[in-house]
Image (cartoon, rainbow, N blue to C red):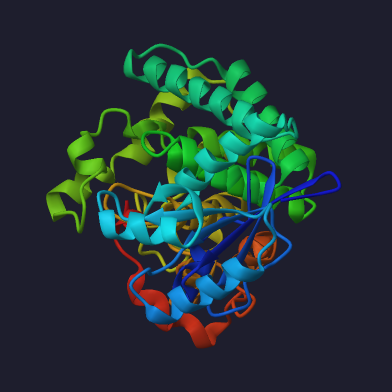
Length: 376
């Protein structure tokens, strides 16, 4: 698990789930491999998320148990309430079990236990994310009460987000957000992290990084008054529900522009982050050069955030799937292709499978996976 000062957790899963695992979380590198590959013998802890009904898997794990070092701790993911899987896992050497589906949330709990047991104090994104969530809660409350937003606090939070991502990386940020903030502010925290990381990786000026980070934190403030039944609705929105959703950019813009003290580029990004280059977006149907550069970047990050986030009715798309969908949108003239490729390079380390890589246009067949979370 630990090599020098590097904390490592090995995860073995079915081949179709490798791309869904995080690559870093709570100061740990997550080393993911398929059960079809060789199980690593140098691991101190292995988390196994495999089908225990497959004879081949049982044979492979039985052989592994005979050769694995005594220090190797195996943690099995099993279906909650499935006694047969629990007994099978115990027979195969499980020291502990967790519940399927294995994801950032389950891995975070395992890593928390390891960190506590071994006294590991490497930096994580948790503190900054929790602080940012508190700022968002305060900001949304101020908006709902028609009181001025504390812009100094928002700016300070943006600076801390940028510093934290610089220290631990965007992958750690994304995984930690999905593990600890699965509801209200998950999307905003993911989009803010993506925008900040994108701007930093592209070598943008410090002032523009600050603008994008603040825009990320404030871009959905207009959703405060939209009913949760619409925001969290599984499946496609009705035309009437979508009309309600479409009010949020203008609501946020009007509130913040009346308050004053916010850069015009930030206000424009809040108002127009759902505009598309081909004129099919909202609220103003802008197209081409009518859409500012920072707004175009926030739009791409907003869509990527919606695809990567976990919702009550969907698991997150993988980075590869999400980039494929964005490439289809670029081919349709909605977003700028060069920005999609740039975001892909920013996130390249978040692709786990050795056979998985940033997609080119040959993979845009995945585009039908694109659903209403992005439309909202």
